[in-house]
Length: 347
Image (cartoon, rainbow, N blue to C red; front, side, top):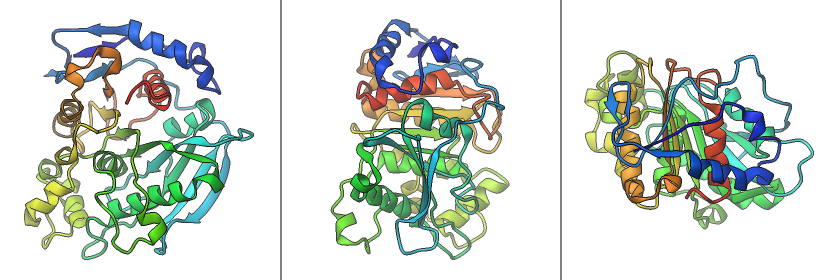
């Protein structure tokens, strides 16, 4: 198990351009690594190979708004009205830039692509990346059941790859990100690239081999079998998302629910992941959705056998509920992880 001490002074380490300080950050990563025999978060033992990001460090005031970006809005990546995306680009920066694909929250049944959180939008100008916020088909009783949304995510990634030259994007440095239901979709796409694919894809999109180099999952449900057994909103959301016969998840086909869960798809090629959960979250509980996913992800990658600086699964339980933000997330650690992944030092 590993923990990192992250320097709270972001400006000393991270500025508008990531590359000039990349080597320095790599050294910080190695020097700051400390191997512990036992690490506990929220009274639970962290699985071997997982990098612990301590709470209460590196946060940014909620009033710290992101810098202005260049926006290219409402591009269609498919024929459905929901299949549109918006692009946020750092102004005045030429060349092909890395991509953060963002998937919005809303329990798979609500929300829209305009709900981009500040903690990700601020990275557009801080790290010179392009954020692409993707709309996807929402589920309702009998409408757009699984795998409609994962199919849309896959289509969007393929579309961005095919159009990367025109849009000045680097498809070889693409990171999936999302919050809540969007976090689940980001993690699912990262764990199972190309598995959920619309059979009606045009030939140019079908020829693409999509693969993300990293995943940022904030409060995403991961084990839909246990999530669907929760009372209240959770069981209804899972029921609609999967397309079950009843109004609760107990009516769902367990094989479908398993297929929609993240961990069953993880393998040795799983990319690095930064997983953020709220220690006070009563909807997506870290004990059933966050920590088990971190352990499964690190085990699949073999991170328990890697040296500390090469371990790519970073896990934070922020001192917050379901709506984690830059005021509760360790932004220093997140930016450090992003820089290492985009530079190819964490794979």
